[in-house]
Image (cartoon, rainbow, N blue to C red):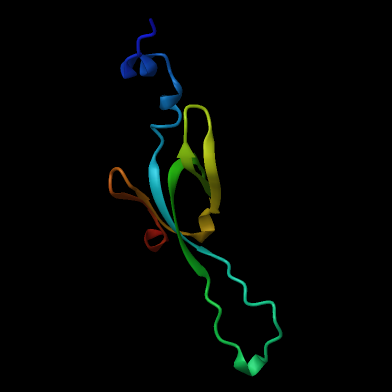
Length: 109
């Protein structure tokens, strides 16, 4: 008879949950480049083309000084939907579980 293991046993054995499920869950607000329509336009009719403002939510897989990598979904041994965002494009990073700012461009020198 197979009996289910207790969750605590997984933690003691260094099971995958230590690596994946305990990762920080964040929301990153960032700016991305934006392209206009691929058509001919007259100079005197051009309107400003502002960057796209983006929000991404996921598990923080890679946190370093140059970029942040998030995973949208995690399982016992896989991740789905990775995105890497350059730090220079990031406006804010919020730890969703704690409700605290991990980074804000406004507070940087």
